[in-house]
Image (cartoon, rainbow, N blue to C red; front, side, top):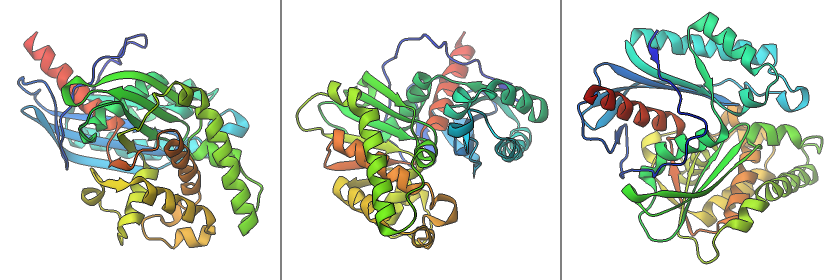
Length: 356
């Protein structure tokens, strides 16, 4: 198994966030040092998804050589029971076993594997991590919400539109939503404020149920979701600077899915979506339209399908609530985040070790 990178200290201060604009499967990084020898890997185990990226360093860049993504719903039922269920654990370990096989076959020399909100909340989160290590060899680090937000920004900030004034980057997860307020651009980004709200697409959908699938029930459920998110964001919203916000960038399955619907894609296409700039009003219109559809109607949409149909409405409510507190005219879409942030950090760390 690849060497596991040591996690950053929990109490570290927020650094300035260097970045450069880029797209596709090659990520620019700031250091101009000799790249480490061998492949690097980043694994992000969220409340809903298990995602892996394996990359080959090339100079100051990295190029993706393998990837894996599976919806595992690790946090399913967590809000009601306070524990990860046996079925969710089995699904997740099955996916992680595939990841472990890829790490071995791709000869990864340095990896970092992180777990987020579901493992932070679950009473048996530590027990689950121990079982994962025993059965797959993968050493999961349950990271703080602060570290989760930092990595998400580090991974997608290169897609932030240039401009003056503050910017907001957000990540809608399965169990939490991270909002990060920044100022500056490119190599001078500085974090001003941040929030991790303990509501994501899984936890919000599970918290709001019992309204039925008729038109009145769907409307009532969506209104309740919006109300919950407004309450969750209220203190952060009160601290936001007044004036006309300029830049907004989102990284999540919700944002990329709605962007796909906006483009009318017959199937998901990362190259078409990653780095896309969409009118915010168009995304709000799609969110509202999806909230009125039945489950069967949502499932019939090619870029939503069976796996996302029951959770996409919760994501729509979270997105609309963000647009309410940060009414930008345009929304940047990023199909990148924590994994890319980990890879950037690993590349920098490995290069620093070589210089030392």
